[in-house]
Amino acid sequence: MVLDLRKNNFTGNLPPLCAHSTSLSTIVVNGNRFEGLVHVSLLKCNGQQVLDVGNNAINDTFPAWLRILQELQVLILKSNKLHGPTSTWQTKFCFPKLRIFDLSRNDFSGSLPAKVFGNFKAMIKLEGEDTEEIKYMELNSSFDASYEDSVSLVIKGRDIELERISTIMTTIDLSSNHFEGVIPKTLKDLSSLWLLNLSHNNLRGHIPMELGQLNTLEALDLSWNQLTGKIPQELTRLNFLSFLNVSQNHLIGPIPQVRQFNTFENDSYGGNLDLCGLPLTKKCGTSDSSHVPQQLESEEEGESYFFSGFTWESVVIGYSCGLVVGTVMWSLMFKYRKPKCIFQLHHLQALNLAYNDFNPSSIPHNIGRLRYLNLSWSSFDGKIPTEISYLSNLVSLHLSGYDLQLDERTFETMLHNFTNLELLALPLVDISSPIPVNISSSSLWYVDLTVTNLRGVLTESFFLQPNLENLNLGDNSLLKGVLPKIHPSNTLLKLDISFTGISGELPDSIGTLSSLNYLNLHGCDFSGHIPDSIGNLIQIRELWFWGNRFTGHIPSTISKLKHLTRLDLPSNSFSGEIHDVFSNLQQLRYFDLSDNSFIGPFPSSILREMLMES
Image (cartoon, helix red, strand yellow):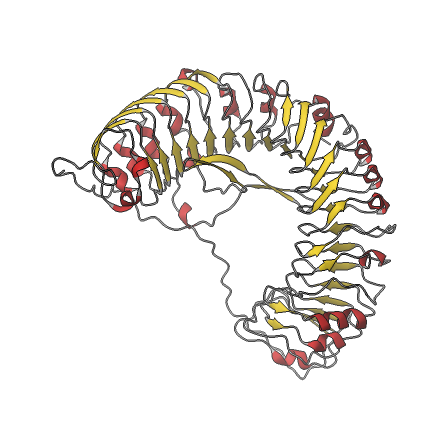
């Protein structure tokens, strides 16, 4: 379960978010005006992976009791009023799976406890980890949807919004506090650390040469401290280091002139009056005899992360093209060649060659008298032959792939001739045609024209189909106009027009789709209020309204949607206080109001009802 309330203007004390549920795995309330303490009820969510309460006004000491959350991977407490000495962290401070640890812009004090970093087991690279493919944190659900965790971090001196958190990203940001003492040498053990920011504190002493063992480090910021001594030559071992800032300290001596250090500019070293050598204009008075350090015994060559797909061996299939075959349904991996004679089986009625590798191959012109054809994701390329439009008895057509093109005339002919068509799936086929107006088949129940470069104005043609259950027109940015008046339907189950240019107000007639269970308006340009008729979608399970220009309040009629499991409303222009319209939504598991203009206290009654475990 996910609770995402980021970028609003909620006020008052931070509510007891886990008081009525133990199933939350992600809690994000970043960018509000919550006050008070971090509530101990968070411990009830013992499977929690992400906790982000950054950019609020929380006034508390460090909640060391969070160590009990053994699954926690992301902990962001930045930009609050947290305070207190680090001496309270010393005992049993253990976050074994923590990958992102951000306490920046608070008022913590004391020395950095060396033992703490040794407990960050997930930041210690394990043997063989480099060979794994990059994965991203996400929460999968049982109803065909996923939530990808995202955070905002200071990376290389800039605030960066990370839309997805990779499981190899490990960061520690303790900047802009009042930490003092020396930089702990135990940081060297965090060999998978990607970013380390200790800037704007009162740290003293030398830069530990042991930091040169952080061989995956890409960003190191030690600026605005009281550090002394030379820049260790051992740091030149950091082959992936692309950002370095040691400015505004008391460092002395020559700047290393080796490897990536030759790419850093003046800003990396400013304010250290006794540093010398390029890129600074101050020349070193005498030649320095410092050496380039030898490789440590434990140091190995860095390996690049990459995606590695399955490599399939050729599969030998015995078949005879002289057989009289009624149905061929294969989903095996052929390599380098296509079985041309399959298409010459004149009695063949159903052909499924999906998920093969016939590259490079075009779809043959001689395709028999098929009624069912599935050539999706088999690496066919080129123009789809006109002869396909002559299959007047075709019931199901599934063609998908990045390299297929369908000309406008063939597309129109298909929709005219296929009078018995029930399934039409052409995702990622380059059609580049106006959206169809005339559709001959009255049996059509499934349409998927995702990412097909459809253009023109959306008409009511699809909505007049008497048996239509699934309509997916998403990711066609040239599809414009307003959502037409929708005729009442008790068959349509899924409607997806996400990432199109559809605009205007959501019509009241949307409420006539009495059987609808999935509505995706993600990334369109809708505006105005959500109509009260939305409450008539009593079978709806998922509402995706992210990234539009909806305004006003959440309609009270939404309380009628007892089967709703996902309510996605971020990045709109909703405003005002949130009223308790969620009392009956006991199935709700994903609730995102982030990046709107809500104000006032966040009602705890919503959490009590919405997060109650079923």
